[in-house]
Length: 284
Image (tube, one colour):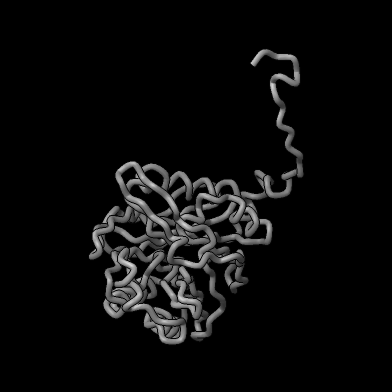
């Protein structure tokens, strides 16, 4: 099965309505170029580091403008629309960093909540504590679509290879990493991590990213890209500004890559033994 996939690069601001309009323009552009699966970045609805500001525009799933707009786009364009993620208000006062996948008829296929929270302190003084605001997810997900099996992840999840391995073993042929990587971590690790996840699982990988300087002062790395199972970057965007990244996905290449290097089949269980030097009579 061969199909066109698109990764939408955005620079979302603090107003969900404006971001929904930007998303609409870019998704329509991707569809006009033949894409039948379109992915948007993490935090499509609002990039807002001020908690009070975010809470002021936050909606539950039933009333979220990004959710309703994506559903309408999927229906109107007859394509799969994957909202990489948007912030969703939960009943317990927390927030879900939640992705949505809509079918061409507009029906919701599934959601995915980001599992791993970005709790880090960077050398440039940036400090992030997602766990203080967001409720982490606890379930990996693979969706069976007409053109292949799709595995889900969001941004910081990319640093946890066991998630991707679990999805690949379950049959995922296309892995997804919508993101809002910081510029510092993006320059150091973005491409190498994405290519590693594709290579080690013999899968395509699609990563739509936020890019540039946002209204809240945050700067994200961009460089949205689509990667094949051999680790080749098929298409990519720059480090700032909106973009539509499109590539042809031939799912048969997944079978071919996994046949050449069948590491998913060759994996073995093992035990771990920690040996103290003193126990072996070796001077410490």
